[in-house]
Length: 127
Image 1 (tube, one colour):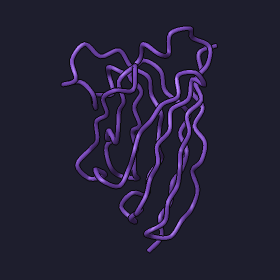
Image 2 (cartoon, rainbow, N blue to C red; image 1 turned 135 degrees about the vertical axis):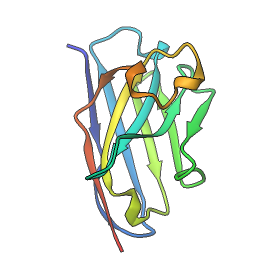
Image 3 (spheres, rainbow, N blue to C red; image 1 turned 180 degrees about the vertical axis):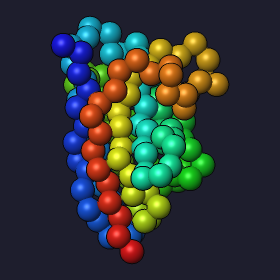
Image 4 (cartoon, rainbow, N blue to C red; image 1 turned 90 degrees about the vertical axis):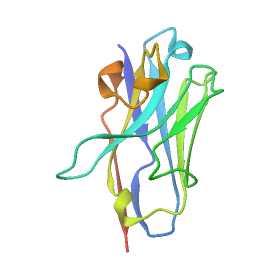
């Protein structure tokens, strides 16, 4: 079946780093999908963090993480990564991997344009 499985979450101190991975399976055309990372903290709405175009040429970041996070993909492995450096307590959230069909980059952080979602991995950053 179609599946996205995140891994790599955990607990770190402020200033530390984590690398999240998202393994995709059950679909023959992951390389035609935008892949995104979203996060949701308790009491807050889900927000887009980073997204990458099907071929990996273009990347998009929320202002809050720009310069600290890097999204990448390895289409040969059907895997997407989120390298998170200089982590802050406000980065604490459940992080979700998603695959979407976008006909305009105006939708890059709109959840409704992502068709497949992973189960999430928890990231906790202590001060």
